[in-house]
Amino acid sequence: MKSIEPNTIAWAAQTACLFEINAEKPGNVTRIKDFTDSCYEDFMVSAVAIGPAFLNATEASVGETILRAVRDTRRLVGTNTNLGIVILLAPLAKAAGKGHPKGLRAAVTKVLDELTVNDSRTAYEAIRIAAPAGLGKVERYDVQEAEIDITLREAMMLAQDRDTVAREYITCFQTTFELGYSAMRRFWEEGYRVSDSIVQTFLTILAQEPDALIARKKGMVIAEQVSEMAGQVLEKGGAFSPQGQEELRKFDHAIRDEKHRLNPGTTADLIAATLFVFLIEHIMPESFTELIRRW
Image 1: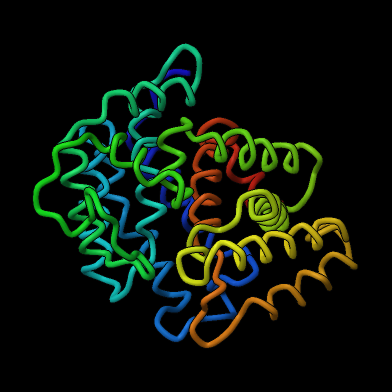
Image 2: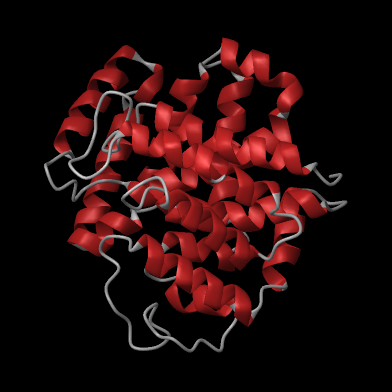
């Protein structure tokens, strides 16, 4: 893979966020369904806000990109809309800018191997600014600690058992590439609508990976139950069949409440990462008109 131009990287990051929020994913904020503390417009504005940070992602450190993107978002939006997305996209964007003869995943592996202590410090600052829900407290290297002396990848290693986003840093984005991108590319090649393919990919990830945000709020048993429900929707065809779409509507209703405690928010973050990879590896701006035609 050749190195990707900064403008294209920023385009892919923003477009991935826009596509993620505009797909009718169950349990998430969508064009027609808001939460009490955040709305569709918050996520649209957030997608635009990260542009400057990702325009400079090749030259900046991963931690600096995360921090700038979160700061720029919070200037415009009053709640955490994209912390997980930004944490996932930052190393992917830097890798796209660096390039690698063996492709994007090899490039991101190299980026992850080179993460520093300063990346940890800036990323932790971003997490404090975003103040994500259900974060809790851990015994060592808690996000509220002022002094951090481990690299960002080492910090992610400590969190990998309870946080799917952290685990992506340890597995070189295994879920993003092997589950998300693999599914999204297959659905595209089979001719399905893009919006339906995003929802189907969301269900595919959720069915196999219990959502970390649900687990933090309600426990792993509940998160596993939600994953089982997603799998049942897939068995009926998911977004690709009339029966599956009816089951999808029932599933969406079942996991919504006023406090959105069963919101599969981490899975939505993984969808944004998946879409970034899909755009960089398979679409690029020159094929974008075909993508929109099939939305």
